Length: 212
Image (cartoon, rainbow, N blue to C red):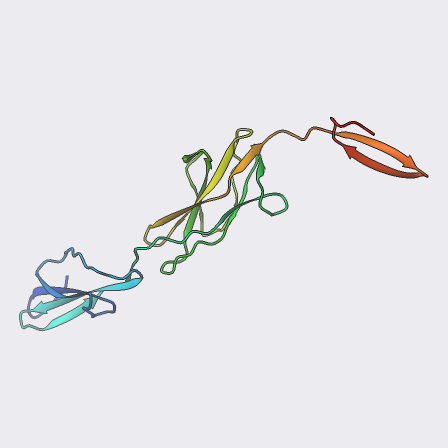
């Protein structure tokens, strides 16, 4: 509340603008003695910093203006980046260990108005991307993580979901390319040793092939 030691505060006026004291979004409006009001102010371009200004008038008609701090008005969610599942060499991979961690990275999502963005990730079945194995795991503003160790079903395909949330709570999801869980080791082939003039060559052949 406004306070006046000489005469009581008689009424208030409220306005909305793009700087303290400005009324370009909504002109000063008399709200009587109310100290809490709600307004629908439109249109406001996304990315605008909105300020609320309040005038308190005393019985002599003299007023004082108080202004809020600026609040960002945003209507656009983040723009998604690409999500990558990396193998041991640090490059994109199609097959992953069925009972190990995943090395996940993503290109930073973009939001022109609010930064930094907050990220989370989860693992989902390819055929039902709404069927994720666990609640999403929040990682702050990191763009590279080693996941928890999921027990995946051999031969099943999965995708990683990364979600970015901006400063006003708007969200954007992005999925990785599909990965296949593999828990079987390679089947050994046949090693054939040949010696020519004291020089040894080792040839590796598929176990089902004929040796010629």
